[in-house]
Length: 396
Ligand SMILES: Cc1ncc(COP(=O)(O)O)c(C=O)c1O
Image: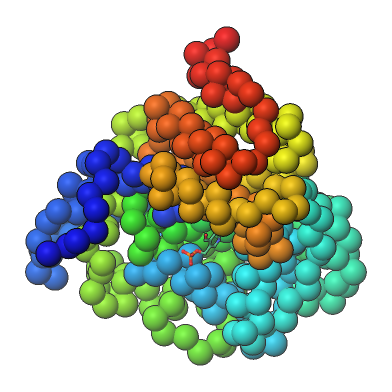
């Protein structure tokens, strides 16, 4: 018998991934596996391909699905595009650009980095300068994180494309939309993005376990020429009519059923409405954080209001404040799970996720639980945060 105390009601999950999974998605996954020849599996995979391409706004790219997390999707992109000893440029966005760069180096690539300035998005001028300095065109790709989930800052992909074009550099533009897809506007073809990668557990409202990459014709040509030994991740082998080959083996059927339903839910809500809802949820969180911060102990990490992410808000605490105690109190006493600071923000920040399957009472419950935890921990907060959040929701 499970002797843990029963805690009634819902627990609120406000990490920036994994995120809350809608009941309809849970139900879609409540199925027995199928035999490998069952045509329903092919129908689901085809629907996911259409749905994801629609979300990415690409008509032409090839889509590759993996039984993997975001690191798996990074691995796929690195081994398909970067030959042994070849160089990529990783513009600094914080913890996740650092991690992607480290993984690239671990796999035998070289990395040129542009500096990350805390609280700021990618600096397109620094990218342009680094590409101009590469007169021999050794850099094969620019690996850019759209929303860095640690900093809570979203970078301008159009400006980044402009920087690559201004430098007249042939490097591919590869964008990590793990934290932004479904939460922030993104259009692969219109932005001139050559490769996109993502994962299922954030804006896509599914459990972790499916990673994906989309590659345009230029990227596929680079992949064809690239001599890096690879098999499971290889786009050349995965480009196939057959589900078994598309997944290099047995597809993760249960998760696919969930992803198919989640993409259908997003279409039923309307993609514009999905983005508008994320904008609103973000504004509500920002209204509360602005009030809290008037007492001087908390502040936004993102220095520019316009580049603060619509997926997650990173809140820096004054020195001496224990972020882990805030998180533990929020989770254990008030059933609200929030995230801590990552990388250089470890112990200096906490993060509120507001992406995916989220609505007004959920975000109000989250903010109330976080404020209660802050008060229990005697963190000074300005008054009126919930009132401000409600006024933002009520439109006045
Ligand atoms: C922007 C971004 N990229 C990549 C990853 C890595 O994904 P995963 O933890 O699924 O391996 C994450 C994880 O949070 C992320 O936020």
